Amino acid sequence: MKKFQVVGIGNAMVDVLARAEDAFLADAGVQKGIMQLIDMDRAVDLYARVGPAKEVSGGSAANTIAGIAHLGGQTAYVGKVKDDQLGAIFAHDLRAQGATYETSLAPKTEEAETGRCIVIVTPDGERSMNTYLGVTEFLTADDIDDAQMADAEWIYLEGYRFDGPESHAAFAKAIAACKGAGGRVSLTLSDPFCIERHRNAFRDMVRDHVDLLFCNRAEMLSMYETEDFVAALGKSAENVPIVACTDSENGVYILSGGQRWHVPAVPTEIVDATGAGDLFAGAFLWGLTHGHALEMCGKMGNVAAAEVISHIGARPESDLKALFAAQGLL
Image (cartoon, rainbow, N blue to C red; front, top):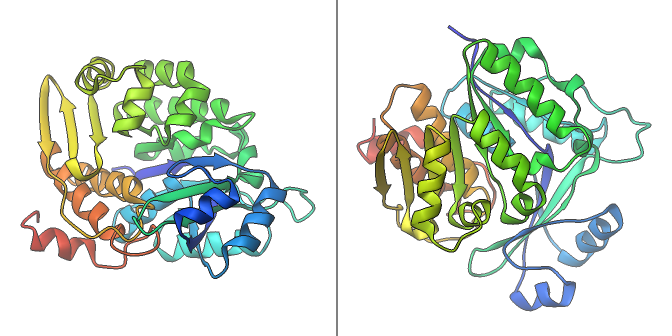
């Protein structure tokens, strides 16, 4: 038996969550509903503009790993932070969830700082993310522990992490170590604009190495450069053993072995859409590593996503297992 059910690799960030009207986005030059990369000066300016905010450790794959740990799964995370205040917050929060976090810290002398994502939530629950990567951009193959990857049933790779000078080498090392020891690889596409920057690399990885692909409708269409959603799903299923594609209030489409399932979304009031896909993936992977059928994994993912969008922040505030039981999933 392996030590870890899932090991995640991604951008280690601290999320700065603030509410604002749509007019604020226009005034501040923020594009609604997507992730934009920003530099340190822009991060300082936006932070000053947003007013009261909530600071919590985040990052897409870290949220997924925290969700699995919340459910009692054995998890670990790899992502770079600096030996500074925000870096300490990130490490403490993740370990407090029960996840293993051992990535070496960037030294205090490093010019770049711990990454942060300023998430502006509008009244409709949509989130507009402004990301300063900081030191997390410089994750390298040296940060990947072969033994840890080999001791994982699954690794979970964050598409956002493709932005970085040595990220592809780090992913390649993790994949080789995991698959060499009989493990499997999952990938989340993260964002349509991320796909546009790295489409060929994504396609090669998906075709050659990925066993489980997570994405949403917009990412799927971007990946296969089409407006035909059904056709895009079909293409992905030709390349990947398992595909889980979320479609907002329409639920999730799961494809595997020539079969297709549609799992309706769980109705809920959207307060903050941040982390919906992250927690969907976490619950899905938890279900998968605990022997549940794919359709059931999709149901669990939808319950977790509904919970996290019902409040501010990308970490669960309710007992997910209790919610699964209430829905008859356990």
